[in-house]
Amino acid sequence: MPLIDYIPAQTNIHFMRLRHWTFPFSAVLSLVAVLLFATMGFNLGIDFRGGTLIEAQTSQPAADIGALREHLTDLDVGDVQIQEFGSPRDVLIRVGAFGASDEAQQAIITKVRDVLGAEYSVRRVETVGPSVSGELVRQSTLALVLGAVAILAYLWFRFEWQFAVGAIVTTMHDIFVTLMIYSAFGIDFDLTSIAAILTIMGYSLNDTVVVYDRIREMLRRYKKLPLPDLLDIAVNATFSRTIIVSTTTFFATLALYFFGGEVLRGFSLAMMVGVVIGTYSTIFVAAPILIHLGLRSQTVAGPAKEEPEAVLGVDEAAKLSEAEAAIVDEPIAPAPAKSSGKGVAKGGKRPPARPAKA
Image: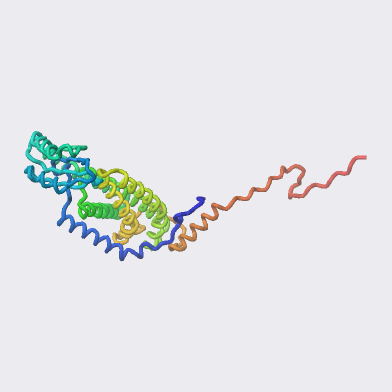
C-alpha cells in the first residue's frame, strides 16, 4: 500500500450524468475547428509550401525587424516573412519558393545574406523545392490516412462495431481540436506537426482501448446492470490510471515546451493540448457514445453466467471494492500446529496409563 494516495484507487463519480453537457461542448469545439479550417486555414511551413528558411542572430541587444522587412521587400524576391524567434536577438526569415531551380533559391539566399551584413550571423538555412514540398504533402496525407485505416481495421477485429465507431469518433475529435490550435494561433504546420498528430492518435487510442477493455469485461460479468451504471463503474475503475498517465505525459511535454527550443515549441504545444483533450474525450466521449450506439450485453461475445447475478450500482461497486481490498490487506493468522498423533486414541481421547511394574 503506498504511503500517500494522491488519487483514490476506486473513485465513485457519476460520469454518465454529465454526457448531456459534454456532448454539446464537444460538438461546439468540432464546429469551431471546422470554421477555423475554412476561414483561417493553416500556416504551412516550408516543408509543404517550398522556399527558404533562414535563422539569424544579431550582435545588437535586439533585432530591428522593421528595417529588415523594408530592406528585404526592396529585393523583390517574392513572399518574405520575418518574425522574432525565441530571444529578441533572433529572427526567422521565410522566403517563398522563387523559380523552379535550385540555382534561383541559392541566389535568393545570397541576396538575403548581403542584406543581413556583418551585423547578423546566420545560424541555420533550410531550402525545400516545389517538387519536394508537393511530395511531402502527398506522403504526409498518405501517412495520416493509412494510420486512420489501420486503427479502424484493428478496432473492427478487436472489438464489436460499436466500440470501433466510438474509438474512431473519439480519435477524430482529438485530432480536430489539436488542429484547431494550429489554425487559431498560426503555429507552423510542417512535418513535425504531422508527427505530433500521429502521436496524439496513438495516445488517444491507447486510453480508449484501456477503457473499452474494462467495459467489455463488465458487460460479460454484469449482464443485468443498466448500461449507464456499468459505464460509470468501468470508467471509475480506470480513472486513477488515466489521470496518472496523462499527468506524467503532460509534465514531460511541458518541460519540452519550455526547454526544448523554439523549433520544438509547436510540437510540444500540440502534444500538451492533445494529452488534455485526449483524457477528456476518453472519459466524456468514448464511453458515453456507446449508449447512443445501442451497445447491449448481448452484443459482446463471451460465455454467460448460469447463476443469477446481483445488480450493482456505482456506490455498491465502490463499497464492494473497498471490502475486497480490506480483506486482501488483512494479515493472515498463523495456522495451529498439527499434533503428531502419537499416544492419542481414536476420538481424541488419550488412553489410560498402564500401572507401573513392581
